[in-house]
Image 1 (spheres, rainbow, N blue to C red):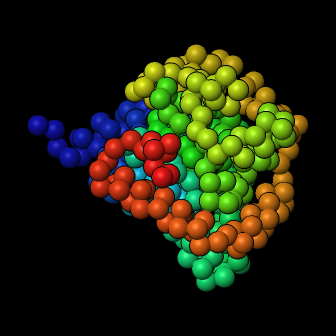
Image 2 (cartoon, one colour; image 1 turned 180 degrees about the vertical axis):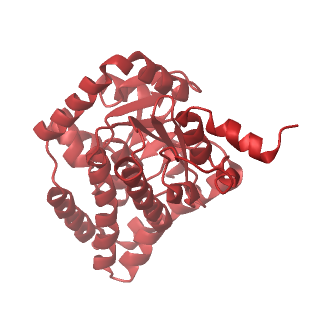
Length: 330
């Protein structure tokens, strides 16, 4: 059996990509203190310890994979927002300071049947009842800051991919619209239910949809409050790649493999598209203030609907079944 010194020497003889994988996945952490010599670029360690987002790095195709694993309801709670920001900071540091090769950032969810149900309705009800409009504005601004950075690919030459293996509603749908490429499995649902309790999606939806579909179609989608299938979203051009259930991750890999030779051009095209359809942070924040003011006008009936939705979301964690929005609003 080789000695520990021999083992360390052998590991150092492997390509840098192997060492990067060890440190990125955490499997090589115990060896860090034993191995000397050049250290391969690695994913920033802070993103490996997030509470509600699981992160890994694949050096072969230079992919950062991130999956939400929410504590409690699958929504954008304050802890999730904090993790989003730390994730973005960590990916940026990994690229700029650690010199880690990152070509793709893929974001999905490990919550069964749900990508994200959007904003924290429980927080909304609490702030509205307390008359805390500033608190709502601050929450909304935190959301759009995360969305804005993602929309601009963290100002890095990377391609962002939203992987939808469960329903994306409200703010969850808004967040998806900030990705370069959306891959969705059949059977997933998309929609903005906010109008059912007197609100509208105030954190990017109108800005994105108006530029992609025109203002009339954007307003129609928001005001109808109905659920759209992945197939309908694909027909509208919102979903770029539509696949069978359970094939989402494989489809992402196939997309990356298929387009590896033209990745540089694709990334540049997405960057050009952002310049043509520019959305400023100021625009997003102004809409947040409109949204917050509208929220303060909600009545008790509206708030009771939101509370029923919160209870329905709470049951998801307990029963682990796929959320079917059209049956849960009653």
